[in-house]
Structure formats: structure tokens, C-alpha cells
Image 1 (tube, each protein chain N blue to C red):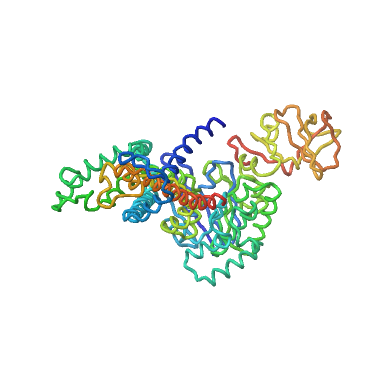
Image 2: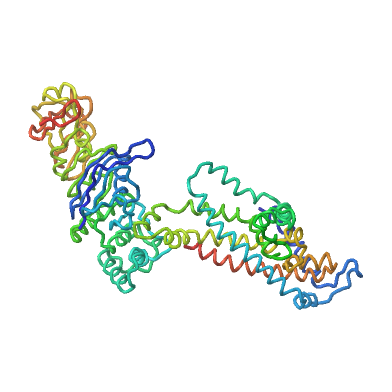
Length: 275
Length: 334
């Protein structure tokens, strides 16, 4: 165990310590270099910046949107895939496929093949109905990002929810049917409570990854049109403004935020697992 | 009311016909047990009655009304499943109230019915627990409670005791019989255990491969099994079945004699043999006796005080009044 723990500590503690260190210094590599300790000034400046709250809001919107889409459609897809059908194996592999596509690639595919206002598939569809094509990434940038990121995470949610569906005792559904529960009541009273644990696990894991969504924004809007999330703001502070100190302070905020979310969600999962 | 009539009901899964056309009438208030070896179609038959499976042909009538195409919830039947099928995320109270809630009954009436069901089943102290916190027997009672509150026309039990240990099973058997006497509602009970069938049933339906082999009261089946299958299936220990020359002597292809209908003697008897393994139950003793001219050892049931040992030579004679004779097709000869 020791070597693994050592590796993990080095892997995590070194960057963490460096981030903490830089967050306390005024460090601008191309504009004067390391200008010494500034105390908590970076932390104050990061939060009081006019881009901070919009970035938090955007992050919440994207995370919440993707969670909503991937869970609602994940449950529906899992229900569909749970039905016996011809070519089940192939269909299941196809459903999981998007998960294996790199975020950069999938964002590029969406941007150029689907959402492009002149040549994109969506533009063709809109024109086929005589409508003006939507300029996705400019007009509805957040919705577009939610679509792209959801597409990547839907397979994950579907997979976990499918296994949960498969573990549902069919006698319970039959008992509910005999007890007079219609299909909808069976779904809400029996299937959904059964899925609650799987849903919390999906929420937990996805939230942690979704807070760090970066490639999709970088490739599509580059943070423009109000798609600047907290992660992206930190990136801009460090690399575009060349202010490592300020960016590191943002990084520390992100660590705290992620831990609050993790703690909160761990408690929910813990409570669910106790049952 | 709960008179259930099956008229030429048949069921096929694809090409495989698991239940060939079958007729059966279950009278109101009767306790009917479907018994047979595993895979005989008894559970399928119950599920057809419940409506959980669609019939492939024929008609099911409940109280004279055609119910063949009626969805399960509208048939007025309640079912207790083998796995109990309790809803794990609901308290016992909510589990029992679930069918009432689905029927849209008002809360006060729900509460009243849950209370009275809990009283009947000794569940009052457990109403706020979850199924996961209950023992097997308690879960079983919750499942029965969920069935009772609906005041159904008939109860359907699908091997409800097979997940319980032996001691609890005997207790629950009594409780279910007691419940039947009190409610006086039709009950259909599926089991592979002939002891459950014999002890609980008003009427036993013996099934094999989807066919009804015999229908009758427990004692009818015990006294006059219609064929070799029923003869071998009903009764514990099993009836001794003897073929060959011994049977020919009685003008039959096979003769059957129950262990309790064989007389043991030191001096003389129809058959001579040596005592093999003996099983002492205290009240009774079962001897396995290897007889000359009979390939399989005979089981003999005698009182607990009879003292015989491994290797003793004894003489056996069947009680002629209780000798069952079967023809070459396995059917009972008069």
C-alpha cells in the first residue's frame, strides 16, 4: 500500500501545495515575474472581480442542466434498453459509445457538423422546414454546451441506471400491478425509489467531473457569450492574463467548492447506503 | 364471493405448450392447493388466474364474470409472492396501505383497515419499520396484510413458505389455515410440498406437466389415488410401489402399499426380508426392508416401541384393504 499512497500524495499534494503557495504571491511570469507575498489580496480580487459571480452562475447552470438532462434521459433510455429486443448487445454498445469519444473531439464534431449555422446538420433541418437556422453557439451558447456535455455523459448515467433497473425485483412490479398501480404509479412508487441510490451516485460522480468541464468550452466558444465557467475563468486568469497568483486563488476556491459538493453528496449517498 | 372457473384454459410460451387445455372449478370459500413437482405449471396456472400472464386460449370466470381479458388489478384478487415482494423503501404501514392508496381510498379508512389487518397479523408494533428490519415470518405477515386489506374475492399464494425455516413454516401454515377459517375467503395456494397440501387444503389439485392428474380432498387423494403419479406424490413417506411377479400375483402391473399399511411379523408373512436402515422419529419408526423378489427396499412404518435392528430377518404382509392396484398405464384398478 505504501508506494501507492506515496504516489498519490506526490501526485496530489505537490500541485496542491504549489497552488496554495502561488495563491499568496503576486506572480506574473511575463509582467515582472514573482513580485513577492501579497497576503490574501489575490483571494479578495478574484471574488470581487466582475466576472466571478457570472462564472459561478454559468457553472451551476451547466452542471445542473447536464445533470437534469442526463438523469431524465438516462432513466428513459435505461428503461428502453431494459426491454428485451432484437440486437440488444449491439444497441447497448452503441449507446455507450459517446463516452469513449474524447471531449475535444466530440465538441469539435458538435460544433462543426451539427451546430454550424451554414453547413451543420441542424441548419439543414431548420432550412428544410423553411426556418432560419439557429446560430447555436452565439444565440444559445449555454444550451449548446449543455447539449454537447450531456451527450458525453448520458451513456454513463444510462449504464449505471440500467444496472439498477436490472436489479429491480420483477415480483415487486407484479405485486404493485396486482395492487392496482398503473404503469405510471409503478414507475413513481416502485422503480424510481429503487433507482434513487443509483441516481445519487450518478449525481455525485458527474458533478465532480462537470465542475471541471473545460475542453468543450475551449473548443466551441472560448469562454465568450457568457459561457465562462469557474474553471474557465481560472484558466483565463493564469494563461490569458498571465496572473498565476490570481488564478491560483481561484483554484483554491474551486477546491473548496468541489469539496463542499463532495461532502454534501457523500452524506446523501451515505444515508442511502445505510438502508 | 370468489368462485373461479377455468374453462379450457391453455398457455403456451412460443412453441412450448406448458398448460394444455384445462378445466377446473374453485368454489367460493374453498382452500385449494395446487401441488406438483417443480416445472409442472402450477405457478403459471396461478399467474394465469392472477392475470400476470395472458392465457393463450380458453376462459377464466370469476363469480360468473368473464375475466380472461381483465387486467390483474381489476380482478379483485390479491396475491402473496414467494419473495414477499414488499416495497423496501416504504414502511410496513405504507406497504399494507399501498393497494388502498392506489384505489384512492380516503386516509381515515386506509388507517382503519391497516390497523385491523395489523391486529389480525400481530404487526401493530412493527408498522413504522421497513421490511429490511423484519424477520422472514414478519415479512410474510406483511405480505399477507397487504393482501387482506383489499378484501379480495380470493387470495393467491405462490409458494409463500418456501423461504422460511422449517419451524417457522409449521407456524405460518397454521396461521394461514386459521386466517382462512376466519375470513372464509377463497384461497388458492401453490406449493411443491405435499405436506403443506395435505394439511391445509380443502381440495388438492395435483399437477404434472400442465395436466391435472387428480382433484380431490386430501383424504380422497390419500385413499384412492387415481394413478401411479398421485400415489407416489401424496403421502409421506412415499407409497411403496412394486412391479413384476409380486404385482402379477394381485392381477396388476404395479401394486402400491403405504408404509403404514404393512404388518410386521417374526413368524410368517407374504414377503420375507432383512431390515436395513431405520429412522426413529420417537412416535414412529420407518424401517427400510430389503425383501426377496422385490428390487427396491420397502419402507415400513411401525410404532416407536417396535424393536428391530439392522440385519434382522422379518416377515411383511400388506394390509389387503389398503392395497392399491394399478394397470400397465399406471391407472388405478378398482
